Length: 91
Image (cartoon, rainbow, N blue to C red; front, side, top):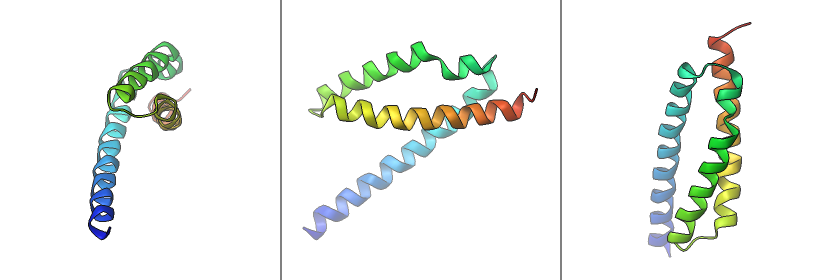
């Protein structure tokens, strides 16, 4: 059981590192957005969620759980990107 837990911890560490890389791209993307609405990009958000659901099904995961996870994660990243965009484009 210790070995299994250790491997799970290793995988979680990798997932978190990848999320950090994803966040770096989110912050970089803010530089190319023309307005706050383009940061939110609701069509892209919905499309992204649908794709994650498909990927979840392919991996044998619950698509509702994966959608919730990504909805929460990406909403957080959108808020951070808005903060970044607002800093770069003060009124």
